[in-house]
Length: 338
Image (cartoon, rainbow, N blue to C red):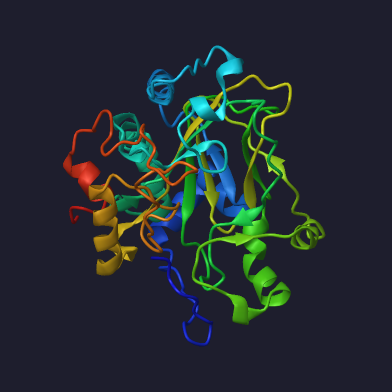
């Protein structure tokens, strides 16, 4: 159930855990971490070995073509709604237990990916989001092009850094391909924007806020303009949840099938017992959540229905291939305590 709105007077602004000396020294010694804090985003190169990343890409494409339809990834004429499992926002998949497929968990538990987030938070006791798989088929003929939807994924009730989101790149993302667009430096204006450009009585705990053209003009006047993030197979894209961003459509010249896994990690100690219970239930249901691993955990619908209200006959009650439920996986899932 989504949380009800809480005004700032009823709920004090939440502050993050203080940054310790250890992580301050790591920022000084690791350029990518310094870039993340300065710009609000960074690309960590080759966080997943290329051969393994390509293996996860192949597994993702195998999953997409496992529904018994005429879908052929070599034939754009078959890239139609009827041949695809139900999607969110055209290109992201939350249903059919996909967020708990083996290849998704294998990608989430890549050692260097975990090490990056352990460095960010100065702890290896992390939780991970049960986030979506994105497979964008370029220039589909049966759907309109989606306009930009610039947003942030942090409530104005939170001060400071609370969440760093991640994209595990299983395909290239060039200038013409679909991919992440960020407004570098906008995270540093997060507090000023909400304090001066919004009505505090409308602030809500939901970690999502959609910007208007007028808002974007305010950021542009302060030097924050859109930047398409370029990445290669195996790269890890990171961004501060306060950074204005959106997922761009591929241009008409792109032929790249974008394939990524969204994954965010935060310290387990930030989760309340109540949130951990919800997270455990979502895990047991093979469900998916938002980008946030430790708070505002809300299970997306676990069943997939058609337009006529009947359940999709292609729906699944469990993953096609389950992962090995190691101690590390169960701790990342919030099922087992550190």
